[in-house]
Image 1 (tube, rainbow, N blue to C red):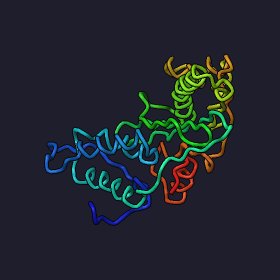
Image 2 (cartoon, rainbow, N blue to C red; image 1 turned 45 degrees about the vertical axis):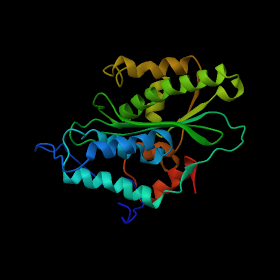
Image 3 (spheres, rainbow, N blue to C red; image 1 turned 90 degrees about the horizontal axis):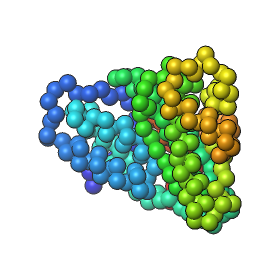
Length: 247
């Protein structure tokens, strides 16, 4: 891969992989590559986090298409090898972004959640993962994503308070689905939420207790979009800049 041709996105738009029905081919060191990419995504490269999370579900059932998609992440890293998380002095406190891609997995139709938190305008925490149950609407998928983000928000806020930075611990979390925000803020909205798993309603308690403010942000400005789906180059570039991954 030293002389590979770089690409501009970690995952090609429209990528739809399914588990390989044949026996796992040991000809490709797929699991080893995914493990190495996961190390990078957790530590310094949030821009590949969704691609790695998506590809890791095929660790026991991969084939040539999965291997090609994994190598594409390497090709993306080859072209962006000088990108680095940049932290600068700022009075900006914690800011969160939560997003979801509804029913994106064609195998089980479960949605992907993604969240990112920044401190002093730079990413300090991020996550991309498949939701544990099928969401019946985009609103429900975004609602469950907000609950995941709320747990991380409380952890980060408590950590800053423990370190004596109470002024930075107060935060705002943004999402791009106004119906999900209404569902989270209005416990009387029963018909739309009575079937949702109890753990997803955690967000309501958090907002009721005033742990953070929840505000709307348009999809075009949603940095966490890169943590939920494959995006075209223009949107990848926008999200990378929002993560403070700079050359």
